[in-house]
Length: 415
Image (cartoon, rainbow, N blue to C red; front, top):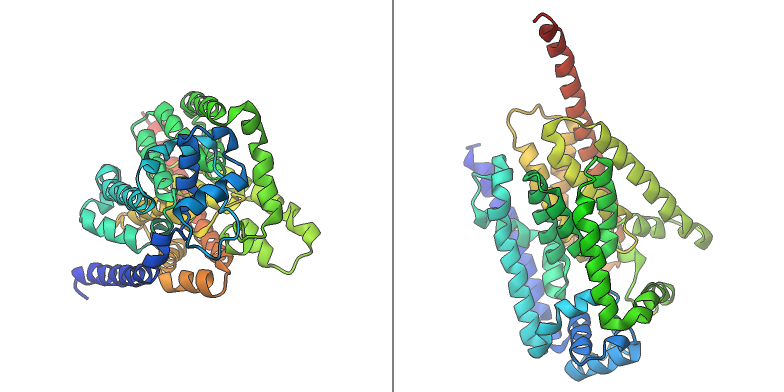
């Protein structure tokens, strides 16, 4: 097989996935125009805030009234598609509410694609093995990743979180932990997909990130209080928990969550066990990741440790939908760069990581699990195996570094 043959095969595979996504998008384009997508929640929240009704942001009757104004042709929606994010994000989307719904949706997707276009140019200096690949191939890979396509179709904010994670990674590589902390704090509009990651960074003795994280987080909290009032901000957790309890309108479905909560939900367990078990297993997984990252002192494992922390964050998050896996595009880039390093000795973990990436890019599987069977949580098993293989790679690199250190030490003692 010629050296270019594998690259050609990858391009064809990714192109096939993009073609599938294009066909799906074409079939749902009219529903998007009518307001079926999740972007309706951001446009609705932005409209409420722009009209000076921030104190009613979490009033479902107000949400439904506003959604009926710009999306009256959604018969399956008998109530509001609830806005569950922090108040600060509604302010972020406020400028979009000056446009029509369709115009705002298109603008938001264009901005998301612009962030995807920027990623290769930002990351390439830190991923030497991927530098020889065209930025167009990077973009093709991003668009072939089903969670990213799903986020674009839904008008979700997951790609913004991916971009912030990428910028935080770059800041850490530049030895600017304070900036990294500030960037991660800006991602608190999905706090459940940020806080576990920050905890794992602290385990790696990156305490200086708190100097950027805490002030920005406090500033966002203050702004949120101005938007909805102190009382509204204090009642926000109760509002989210209320939605978790009712789950009647399909807004929160554990069977569609590719994380530990979703995995355990599909097991034949009693209801009394389905609440504590996700917490217990999540704590165990965080401890496992913390221990793996702590003992991995080899400099080359930094990309893998960052990836492991991101993947574990997704698995332990209480609420993670298919589009939230968009953030895993960064671990895909980081781990791929490691796999392409010809100086490394491959092994079973490398094969498992490569197979995990290939499987995550097989869109028909995710389409079937999500659209046909409503069992996207089964994808969590694949992510769990992928995470385990990365952890094994980290441990092996640490062992190799320790062995090399022991061989070098006697030589130093001669001088």
